[in-house]
Amino acid sequence: MNYHLKLSVLGTFIIGKDDYVIAGLLPSIAKNMESRLQQPDN
Image 1: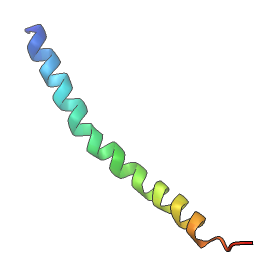
Image 2: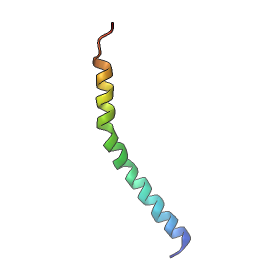
Image 3: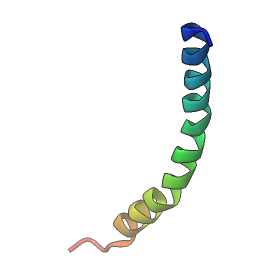
Image 4: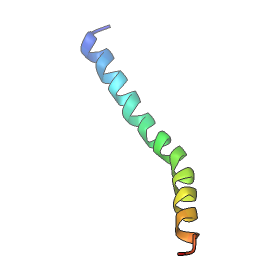
């Protein structure tokens, strides 16, 4: 297999996985932000 083809396939795989990683982190980020917003000022 050609080096450039392997590199292209790997790059496409990484770019495709990026959305799933971000989507997996969003609930924990939202939960963290919600807890900060709901704390009363003292």
